[in-house]
Image (cartoon, one colour):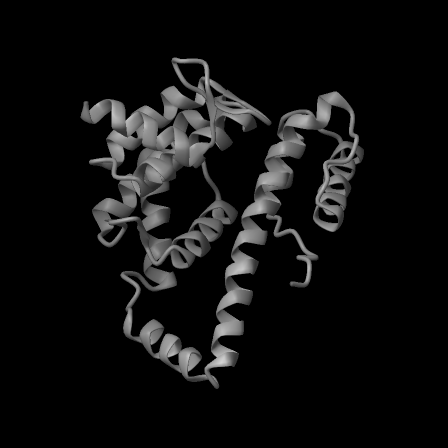
Length: 231
């Protein structure tokens, strides 16, 4: 399979890096390091002080590669079946109606941002819209399909106090928040509460530290947390 040759970055990513003290030169080193990783599959040598933003950008790259791999696999399968699978997928996609148009989403999000003084801007909202569309407006069986639930999700993802957290904490919290929803959290509030607690034990490059000392990725940690709740 052809290597992924791009990294999707948003203006908000750069602002967050700058807000955590990285200079333009630092950001350039991190971005170049990620592209070397995409090209070789190996972690390049970078200054120790830049390893945490590199770990975050590398994670974005890995997620892009996973998405690209899935797309290649679907395209290959469609080609082998003479295009029938592709037509069927397109038909299924058209039949699945999104709960909100872009205009409706932005109206709801703007109202929620102003009402609750959420820590986000237009770029953040555009990013979230793309993410929710890509997820089919659901995390596992947990659908973001009503205005009330969308506002809850926004408030949990971009809470007012997020402005007081550093980039590393926000990144860790959001990742496991969505993983908790994906793996069966009973509510957005439950996922939000456990995500905040888990993010406090997150170490870049290692993951979330569990009570037994293990470091787990977001999906593994979410499963462990929810398993403890059920016991």
